[in-house]
Image (cartoon, one colour):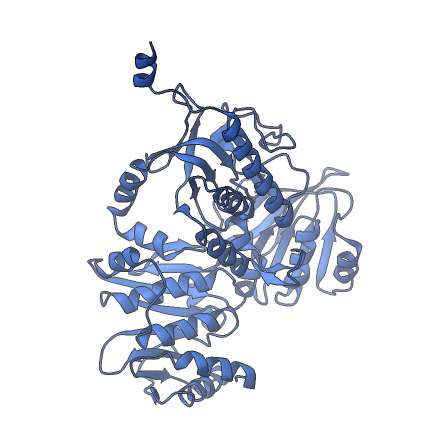
Length: 529
């Protein structure tokens, strides 16, 4: 199962085990069970602190538990945690074996103090880059708190379970038998949702903070670059981000970041966070901005957060990024994550052997259709325009696939379903006006991005497309407020462009600070009089 290089690396990690652990397998006669047993035996052979045991006592087969010997502490995987989940397996081995987590100590203490019973189940796919973050967070909670249990389930191996529960997006997390959440979630976000007092406590801490010199709103590549450039000037810098890493977290392959031949979005996001934390930056994650208040007599711009807390700063850099654009047709919201999806890499494996549609004929749409064609029975790609807009090399590949149909001049008008999941799509032929229905089980929307700027309407100037209008220095229409990245009128929405724009905005903010005198305090004015 493991090549020589991977075995050598894993052996080195397993030297960090402090306590003995057991790998307890529940297997059947399927090939997947034989593969899992071979993997577990191989891992057990790499450390004298690991024992392999076959018990067959779990209803899900193949599955296995990683248990701290002599205790009830364990985490469980149903399936083979390879691909993106191999890192989750390694971390689970280490943490059950007593190796400490690098998460913040106050967050670890918060998990350990949780009261109640929390039975988590997570459905993942091996191609999903967002799933490991959820699996690893919940596994860590099991290690820290005996009242938490977790099993990570490979949806591709447990199709009957997936069908019964109508799981059509990964990661999907169940808590005590009910849907808890879908999509990428960090440990702090999960804890905040089950620790009801966490939001109020965090809001109180944030509200008590002194004013910043530069406050960055948004934690994508533009926001990270802005914070680093500002902090390097030695000025008080903070970041308030709804989700640090932003849309990069949902990006699988990145091959156009200069000096980096190839990487993945979550890896880049982790590197950005590590780089930001290297400097004296106050990083406030999971904080959504709701209102921008221009500077008053005290010279401070204010940002009101969803928690109710208000942050103050002499300058603000807006880098709130963008999100997937929706079709905005009847049925889309009703069947979101019930057949309507936006990430083919994550959710594609759940539609194996089924019929799907891809909406959008740009690079993203054509790439999605190519990827899905290798998994599903048939792909119908619909493009509103009269021709595809993807690069010719991608179009040639698409035309070579026998199970792909391309429809141009096709306007999607309605998502159909049976109340539980998608059953079809209605579109109009824009040339002759006829309406058509396609029978299918999945719809992947790939029609571009929408800037996260609704909360700024009426405060800063926005373009007709909702983008923040900036000049060549990143200045907005509000003095002391700058902007960068995909939320702005910058013409190209690229990671490297966003990083450069964030740096520009930070340098402009610093220039604004050194040219703007601090407002006099009321007491100073009275004394001068």
